[in-house]
Length: 106
Image (cartoon, rainbow, N blue to C red; front, side, top):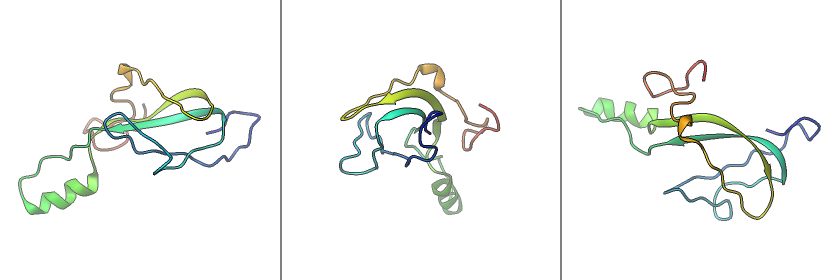
């Protein structure tokens, strides 16, 4: 999201992170340079274990287990590359007790 005094509705950027690497050149969408509040979410890529076929569809619909959701970082983005350090204490941010959905409070 843009900072005060800037365009209030810049386009959202996104990139899929695989094995700690990402790019918006081939997939995803970059954004214009400037000051932003970034929201970063991470998932472990694993789905809940299931015991029968009925649970398989439910597990797939729930998605992979979240490590943290919408962790916010203030940053000035500049081309052509930007990397972000998310601190270890971000683990569990925005994750409910059951680990499958967003918590009501971070």
